[in-house]
Each structure stands twice: as structure tokens, then as C-alpha cells.
Image (cartoon, rainbow over all chains, first blue to last red; front, side, top):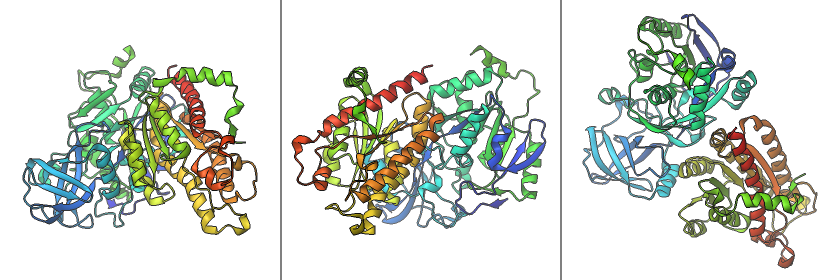
Length: 359
Length: 256
């Protein structure tokens, strides 16, 4: 697919490929996606804002230039900004493809890193020479100020102009807990939310600390997505139960919403509160909650693509990918979108949505 | 018309105030711009006294540090809301340190030229600065925090934006051109926000706190008698009462 190389969240010509429950493919302007929704449906989006998680600096033991990309945290609590999981690159920046980036200097526990105004220590290595747990030495407000002023949004070489924070915050962005934007949410604007309400479609948000989408290192990429903390507000859990009870569809805006909701519903009914999504979703996953997903277009081999295999069988997904290519769809975070309705599974023993009628 | 606080009856105000006595704002996440002097400082202190967590923004590093040290629920943010490039760093710190936003008070204001000048004598740059601080700043910050405010409204926690207005927003006082025109625009914008976001549950208030004994007023009217002016503390309590009334209605709506 063609990479979308300009940082425009809602280009007027953005396209949407719809794959309905019968496998029928159609496409339409993405700005009209509300037309797909039915009264009683519930749209769930991830309201995490992306922090500027790329921090340039110096590895003090060697004096060498590094780029640290924060990639994971323990919780979404506002003062829990002491310890992060991070990927470390050597000198260079986003203009070089991550696959071609220089390795960092040899990293050891206790190494001090100077990242602009922030001081950090390497806590330990996480099974790979460029994946570390690091601790900031500043108090929480100092960490927030340091990241706010020194950090840059994580960026990849397919977008040439440096990204600003307003490029990566979705219109509904709230708590800054994600490391890259939950970019399926770029499709939403406040006009679309008003259209949903007018149509009798409910809208709620969850907060999921989306991690990084690519490291450039095959060994690390197979470990993606890392564990991601999330929070499901009580109002969202209630809206989900109500939508299921009335026979409405749960439409997830993006893969992170699927991951959070399916994790929260792993024991049956979706639970409100904070937790950490640790599971991988793929061809073998049985989705309990989500009926449809609005997502960017994804290349085979990525964890996002793997997740789509839970919605469609491989033959159909291959057909969809071929259609996306044939019709000139653009890919990556500023690209076009797909809306896929989950195919009902005919395997025996699958829990049906009738369960939620008891809620 | 900018809503006049004193138009509500005293009995009504006391009734609402009693609902929000002392610790009544426990856990409320409040953001205030211009939080180190005058009305903004009084608002920061009053919200803290009632149990809220407060992120406040001001330009002076030293003053921000002094005010932040007054409470472990106070988060001081150094920034200038009239500067476009500072808006997202400010919004990131507010939403990050509080974990969301229930109430936003756009209080920071610029008087325009001082001493006050006739419009015909006002430099374009002075008007631009007044518009940047009094109109564009509140617009940008509201937009950047709107996702957090709407999430707060959906959770029945809040979702209130208070824009500090002035009688100069509605009355054409000579020599108040830059300030008055910018505040008039802010007032009207507040009403449009309110109309457009009603269904999302986010409420917008434009309130005139009255003439107060503040450094800004002294700059505007150097020879005024402080005894004739309202104390910023009283004005802060009145504004918080008005916010409390809206929050109360929102929590009732959320509990339905």
C-alpha cells in the first residue's frame, strides 16, 4: 500500500472500505462513516492522548548521542511516571528508517542518561540490547514538564515534516498516557459525534495507553504489542452492557479499543476500572464483545494486522488486502481506513451475546 | 450580556454554597490560567481549600513555584497561554498531572495598552496581544482539553469551562478598546461553545466577577479607591458557587 506521508488527520479525500457481515466489500468517503451506524449501536473510542515520547539525549557513561522512545508504563495513574519501558536508538532521528537506525551504546543497569532537562537511570535490560526499563529522577510534575518541553512525538520516516503535538492528538484526546496516537480516532471529529447522537448512536471512551507500533528490530517487533494499561470508566462499562442488551453493535475505533475491551471482558461481562492488557489478539481469538472495528489499513505481519484476523478468516483478509492495494488505499497512521464487521463464527461452543441480556 | 453574578439571589447562592462547603470538591480536577495573582490566585486557593486538585498556569517561574508549594494538591505549570507553541506543552501537563480535567477556568487576561489608551492611539501589537491572551489562548486551551472535559461529562464528574468576562465585554467604555473588544469576542465565543457542546454535556460559563482590588485593576485605574472594590477572594467564592451549581446539576444528570 502507499504510505500516507502528510500529517493530516482528516484529509477531505480519506477513504473507507467497509467489509460487512456477509463479506461484501464497498467503499465510501470516510467522512460519511456514520451512515454505516444504526440506532442502538455503541461506538467506543480510545481517548488517550499521545505524549511526546521521543527524547533525545546523551548516554553519560560513553558520551554518545541517543534517542529514547518511551514505550510502556505500569499504569495510567497521573503520578505513575517514574518508571517506563523504553527503546533506545543510537544517533540519528526519525528521518532514518527505524530498520536502519544505529544501535545504542552498550547499556547496563545504573547507566545515567541525560535527556534534555530530564535525568534518568537504566534500571535493567528487558531481554534485548535496546529495550530497557528506565527510571526518571525528577518528581512527577518535573517529569511531565520535562517531557512536555523536550519530547517530540514518535515519528517514522514515511512522514517527512516533523510532527507537532497537535498532529498526533485525536480531536477527542484526553489523558496523555499513550506513546503513539490511537490513530483510528483521527477519523472522528465533533461533527461526527453530533451526527451519531442525532441518529441514536451512543458514544463512549475508554483510556488505553497505546504503545509503539514498530521498533525496526524484528526480534523486538515480534514482542509487540507490549503490555498496555487501560482504564474503563463506569459509564462506558454500563453503556456497553446496555448496548448489548438492546441488540446494538459494539463498534471499536481502533485496535487498542478491541484489546482493552476484550481483556476487560475475558471473564464474561466487561468490568469497569483499571487493568493491564497482556493478551495478543489474532486468528485464534474469540471476540466476546466487539462486533465491528474501524481501523487504519495494516500490512500483513504487523500486530495490528494480526488483530484483524480475529474479525475475518484469512482468505477474506487476504482478499481485503488485495482490494486495498488494487484500489490505491493509503496506509499508516494518516492513511485511509477499513471498517470490518466480525463474521459470526459457526464453531461449536462459542459464547453468544445473549449472555449480556442478564446485565 | 455577560451574566452578572450578583443577579442570583443571596438566598439561592447560600443554598448552593452549603452544598459545596469545605471538602465538597474533593478529587475535582481543576485547571486555572493566570493562577499566581489577583482573581486567579484567589481561585487556586479557594479550590484547594475545598479539596480540589488544581493545575494552574502562569508565566513567572518563581511565583509558580511559590504558589505550588502551598499544597501537595497544587500543580504549577510555567507557560504563556498567548503563545501558540506553548499550548500543547501546557495542555499535556494539565491533563497529565491531573489525569483528566473536570473544570477549566480561563482567567489569564491582558489589559491591552497601559496606561489605557483610546483605540485610535492603540498600537496594533497591543490589540494583537490582547486578542492572543483573551481570545485565542482560551480557544486553543479549551480545544486541546475538550476531549478530557467531554470524558469528564460522560462520567458525571464535571465538564465545565468558565471564561472570565467583564462588563467591558458589553459596555463600550472609552480607553478599554483592546480589552473590551477581546472580552466581547470571548463572551460570544463562550455562548457558541455552550450551544454546540450542550449534547456532549460540557457546560460553558461567561461570568463577570465585578471590579476587584487586583494588580490588573490597579494598572487600569491607578487612582481608584481600593475600599470601593470587591476583594478577589469574595469574587472567587462567588464564581466557585456558580461552578458548583453547574457541577451539582451535572452529577444529578449523570446519576439518572
